[in-house]
Length: 430
Image (cartoon, rainbow, N blue to C red; front, side):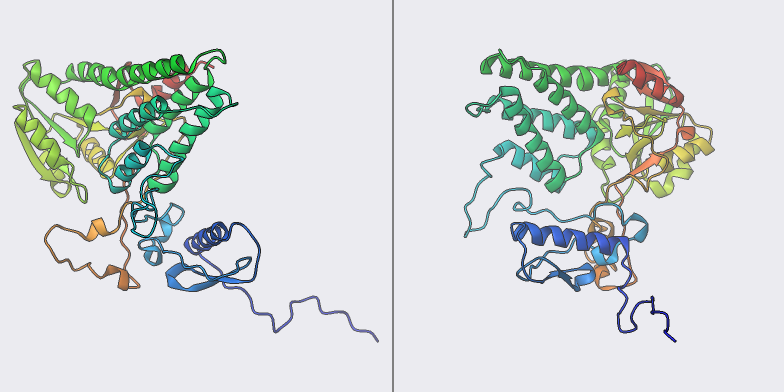
């Protein structure tokens, strides 16, 4: 009597351990790094550094490859493991080689201004949606001015490849791009694609430079002035205005209201780790505006005397929710609980077609070391990386739901959150 064949797995085969999302991502990145280092050629088995500093076998590599683990990779918060982990950026990471043994200077494929701005993006010296966009478009003007087309290539296609390489360098090696940068880059790409084949190099450069200047003036500078004019109508003498962090749109409207002769007081709420409100309150006080400075923990104690809240926005979603600096949603929630109107100042070029319902799916991770740094020298969290059960999370943004937003002040006027989708259709009729 013949027995049935055993269809189950052999008993001596060991099951592979189940990996978390963070571990799978780290393994994939290690495989990509080893593949890039080996030029994509096959070979024997290799070893790469996996999650938590463990050695992981990577097939298809001939040598052992050491990769630098992201900051805090072994201490990642699992709820945010789908986000790209924060990595400390060195000049070499951003395209500059400064070591004595290697040739110094910028890569010949990228303009020096592109590499310099990438370092500023990475170290945070250029921060804020408007500032990042202005800096990017200024560098693109340098790139276009110094651009030399390759012989035998179409001017528009060659230039399109050049600006795409610069944008990809910033987003992959320095910092994730903002919605404002994406909108401006799409505008520039459409200009380059629309260049006539008969246009001369000089004429193309002049036309593109003029269009960039026009975009910055109309969509940023002029839009900020119009927003200040619309928002100023909501400010009355004797008002107590509350704002959070630092926003160029809010700063412009407060200065404009003060220049119009209105008397009011500003409460600047600030939060760690950036503490941008310190710079903001110095600018307002220097303009003759009475100010009060508090931290986010004291928000509930001053909200009872606030007349109106003005907040800045990093991006505006199509469902009316607002992406802003981490802590913005807390301020809006507290204002809603106290029946205080909340107005967001936002230029229309920051509007995104995306719908976002919470701050977990789409966000950006900052340096976790910034959280433990209190500015008081030593900290109890200095050795947090050595504690296996301790995790530090530094989220850069949060999402304010549309129900906490009283109105959005744009250059088109003051709109309710429900009208954002209509505004997108009007701006993009195609």
